[in-house]
Length: 484
Ligand code: ZN
Ligand code: MN
Image (tube, rainbow, N blue to C red; front, side):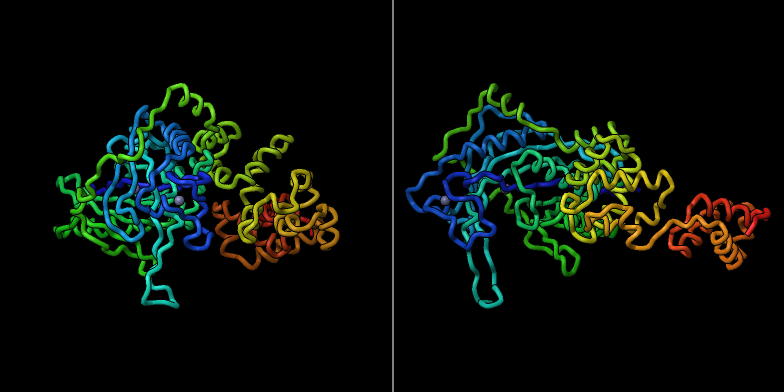
């Protein structure tokens, strides 16, 4: 029996234009005091007329090109009518009948493979104001902030091509990275600059059954999008299996209870009564202008990930990390460019260094580590002047202090132990303390060699030469004569 979710996404991205979509108010709404970036236009006073911001069109076309869309040389605006206190005009200006772009696709990487997700449409619209319900000091009140009202949004609607919540997560991330690379949206979900509505239905392909379509509204992080869809998939699947009737509804993700809750049932789908916006002319684009915009599109995240994999032999996951951490990528490219071995550089950067950076919430460019100093670490290990284990323990210091490895080692009184008598002594003790494992090794579980080496390294705080330890342990386990 095959029970599968079918997922589609609608994403609203706030465009990084200096001013709003149809007036000259600043688009910087998030940190500004409430109702300071407003005018007669974006608060819907009678007699005011909208005037389209040209940069909005340019950004929309950039997005459409990056999403491989067909760009409509003529598109137009419509009014979506509904009453809501955060939308004072009583309608939202959007593109309903003729969007700026349609029929595109975005390539994503999910579960280790590539997948093409079809884009149904991309259109321009305006954002609404923000309501603050029952603040702590005035629980009986609701407040309205119109700063956000009229900020340019780009809405991207996918076909229901996503087969798993993970793919939905990957799509959101790829779209955000693409928009950031284009410089058209900050992608800050926590600030509401990128918002996602996800719709899901679940089908039983054997019995030919399908549940109602549920929409999950305004989820504000990639992780929550995935979690909400996982929850909803299980809920709808259970209903499908038990024969329970499902309803088409809008639900919200409640992080507290880690579940979705019903907000309202659908059926009002066609009550918006869209009609053409009479106050704005059509957008008419010239091919030559579109082609000129096309030349400004930089290397996009997926292209870059492929190139990194190709050029440096990185895995998909490694290339992805560099994509997500541009400072680390810059460092990597510089180090490899200076002739350091790719494998050693990536192992250090994506291993101990990244771990330490994460712990300290730092990016590598804000540390004292330089390519020259990483080169020193790699060189010292390669020539046996120190061990990987020791170097790892020093990474926090090397990120914080502008000090050479040599200086650091002598300051800390760490030396690499090359004293074979000491190594033999510790090795003997370790083998004696683990008779069962020693026995198993002799019976052919040779993989246990690593286990013993690990024990010795732990005992000696990693200061021993690994090859010496390996030799010693091997000899001891295999009963060869060694000189102590
Ligand atoms: Zn305004
Ligand atoms: Mn919309």
